[in-house]
Image 1 (tube, helix red, strand yellow):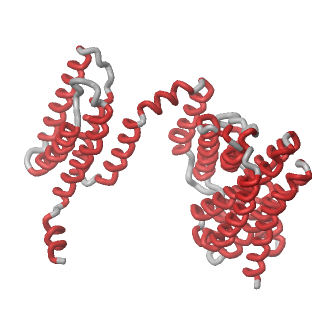
Image 2 (image 1 turned 90 degrees about the vertical axis):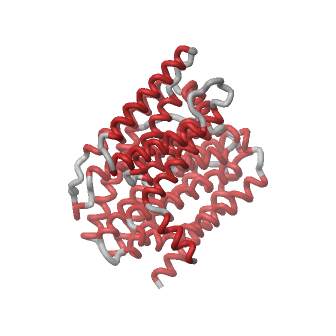
Length: 425
């Protein structure tokens, strides 16, 4: 392994930054060469972008080791060169600035690499490559965007990038469980999921079947899917088995969401929940797959409507619900016995599983040795939420809906009860 030692000694930080800069120029140059191959006399290709990235890297290296004004002079000269190239292109009737801006960014990335910002540079390259290569898709997307969707996107950017960073970080409330910045973060996450689901419904061909509609609807609320599909199954009794399969399938996303929330706010709680949630997910997938195999005509079903692209009122309602559940759980832990605390978690899970999962995980993160108790509360909430959706399906849907839903949720509840007994014993 002597050659590895020699190689590591030879590869100094400056040389590594030079190699990374050349790789960055190669990535952007390949994309530009491929997308402008049919354009005669295009500004830059593979060789140009590699040399530009190397120029930025070497200019900064020389500036640090000789004259500090060298980088400024080279940058000004390169900027002037790009301006001249753009002027020449405009004389030929080409108005676009994409390649010229890419050249300037590539030069700056070469400089950034020389300053040790290689990870940041690679992140920018990934973003650049995605934006440059998705030209047709982005233009096609913009053509289909409505005025309502445009304003929804602007509101989302304002909330996420302007309002959220201004929120205070000082905690308040019982046990300092509530933090304004974290509440704002929850609003942004809810809006992100809502907006992503809206775009999937609009551009992802949801009309192909109940399956896609159930999965996308599960991103919003599996309870909402159960409510809508139960009603739809009365209108289309011939698809009741497929709708029941969709209700159970949408609920599988709930298990994944619960694990994600627990992992973000209290990973020890997530470790406790990993196996029961995984088994619940798997057993609920089995009957769904069986039903869909037997009823493969679900394409005729009407998909869920995209609805509001950015439902801010719903996000604020969720935060208010989250605050209420947090206060409820805090009070129950203070005044009630452990058994009644578990009962309050089960009741809260009927309303919304995400809020109880976040609230309980955050509480466990601040209280040492409470991971198992928090996991029990969350698992009870998952079970109560599943039972509620089962009852919704039974009372709102036809008789033929009960078998697939009962099979799916019955197995989920059986796993939950079994795991609770395992924990308590």
